[in-house]
Image 1 (cartoon, rainbow, N blue to C red):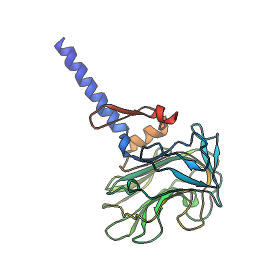
Image 2 (cartoon, rainbow, N blue to C red):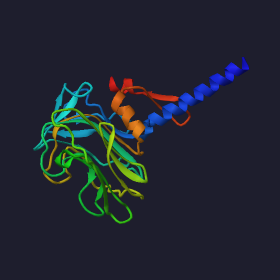
Image 3 (cartoon, rainbow, N blue to C red):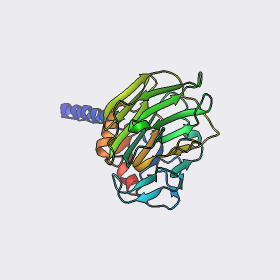
Image 4 (cartoon, rainbow, N blue to C red):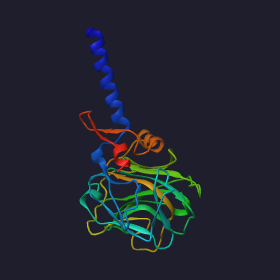
Length: 259
């Protein structure tokens, strides 16, 4: 009996550690848009941080990857998220994930999401799509310089593509459909800019816009591993549970997805 009890404890600990390895903690999400409901001119943030977005000319559609999605017209559509301290990662880690179906590839660098303008001292971070090839970047606090990881893999037009970028304090990595598509080695804190919002679908103050449908957008203040990115790609943000540092189940993404 003692052996069985010890075995049960070992198995429980192993399962808890496994869950931690493939799921980010609830508190690491600083913005979470499932786009499952049409809330008029606002996108509701389900991360718990209150980072709701103001919609301009983007249209809700029932034809998302999982339920609803948000369609950007390529000329005037955007979502603007007012500045909040949570949107400055405050260190040397962050990640962005989204499902995206491009309807065309507009010129320039249409972003999935970015904070800050172009240039030293004003740029922060971003994930954009020049020529349909995802690109993750951070502006560094030490010198304001931009560090860029460019994907060598283009998205497929007219199809759903899972996109992710992660900065883990040692490198920026970009993934397309769960496959590492580009990376660059860097270290250091990300520059912070408290004077600017987060723009989704638009390149800061420039008239460069996304043309396509987005679903399940998430921004986190940690650098996700490849295994975590693949897990969210395969199972969605609604899949299972996040685990807090104590190993206890903290939240069910199925409950979030159904709100």
